Amino acid sequence: MAHQALRVLAGAYKIIDEQPEEVSNETVEQDLIFTGLVGLIDPERPEAAREV
Image (cartoon, rainbow, N blue to C red):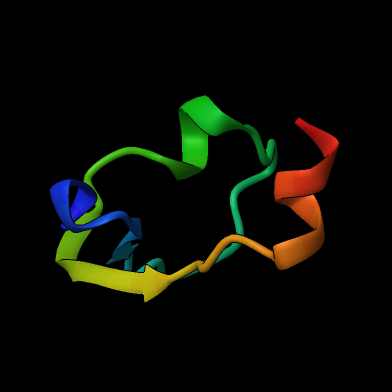
């Protein structure tokens, strides 16, 4: 998708039984289940070409 000039976003989730005491990248962003990729069209704005 990046070769097609699309912005690429990945999605993932995690099922938790209770909120962890400490919420941080190390405690939350582990053992995620990958759901997929999404490609978004992000066309260049006409006025951006004039600014270069």
